[in-house]
Length: 616
Image 1 (tube, helix red, strand yellow):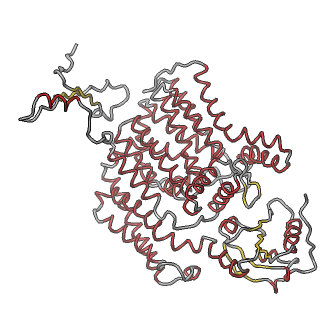
Image 2 (cartoon, rainbow, N blue to C red; image 1 turned 180 degrees about the horizontal axis):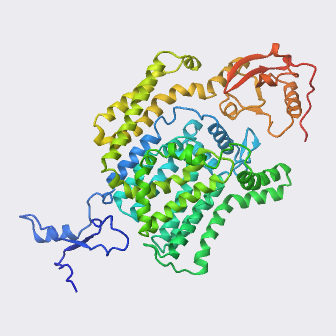
């Protein structure tokens, strides 16, 4: 038996296994590296009693950060800087952000947390958890412009930390940093982290579910994390229905376990232990589902019954099997989404695919489980006829985790550095050409308002200059240059591009013009409206429900409202004026958000339509 380290009295023995990295599966265990440190000796001239008191008295040194946490803290700071660039400088932009912000604002203002509404009408398209998050931020901050982006930002930062920690535990701390950095550089991750769509929060719950399951299946047994993973899936389900995606990881895990791939170990557990996971999933879903069902059952309200049936059946199974919009071919994600939105990691596929193949041949279960799960998630969404690019975001962290261990070796290759440098140069040339074109004054600039803070070509010129600066180190630092440019680009977008686009994409200037036209004391009703009009109006509005209702019924309700006492106006598309309103007596507001709008009051009415009260 080899002699162990010799202990000296009052000495501390440290163990460091961090030097043993990158070992192939099945290799001999990492040797422990010991270092012996003797206690500090008292300085000359100090008494032994005082030295003894200093050694054994209370430690008054300031607390220190955990060892090795500096790079992670720096990465978190960079992540916050990138995701929060331009935070609070824009309104919610269509198509989705105004809808979700309006639902959350109405939820916070009304106190109705179980049944989301949009313009005062039930909104059954999505479960409420994401709206709860925005509503809570709105309650905290008091400004929807500050609140609507906060949940996506925090969810994305949390996803990045989960990816770091899982990669650190599956491999090493440096691999964890590579994984988190690769995720931050991925285009789709940053895009979704900077917008108020549901998918960033869904990706967080899916990643937490995957994290919990892999902590148990690959690094366990860890029954607490197993149950946490299932609870995360439950919260993911009441965020966007498909929160169960981490369950697919059991398929490649079972196959690897059957083939006895390494580093899997046998996990023994009782029926209760294995069954506690699904129980946690059901409990998480029941946080919203149970009270919602109880209220519907006791209310006898047909509108609530229709809401229940719509969100539980029409928006889930029916939407997956027979989607009614966004129809794309089965190969859409493989050709049009993943190659672009998972950049820059997809540039490395010519090298990562052979490396993955070698590791699978060696029986490394970590790669099989991660890659198998990504393939299953992509296949799941590809089988549905309805497809949107954002559906791929939950699979991106798994792809990053499978790529991260290969990055240290790949980044030492000259051809990888040269490819990254080539892409950077092409981007610089393209942006330079775009800036010159915009500086020439094309017609597209006529759509921008005169009040934009700076010329439209300026942000593009700044981006082009940034790309050229990052290209200066040359092709041997191509990956560094491309990475620096991608991170810098989001700062340009947040601080320079968004202030230019906000007056065009936001409905605030348009609704301010509507308010000036009708006067401060008038009441405003909306027909065939869009959510941004309700959200950014300068006064409370009456929004008439038109979805799934006959046009005649909608117009009768609006005319009955218009005929009531008071100074009232209706805002509606010009194509809906006839036959109830005379276009010559309407106020033409021009085109906004791809719709030509007009204002009418009682004087614009014709005798062709009759106003009737809505059915009770």
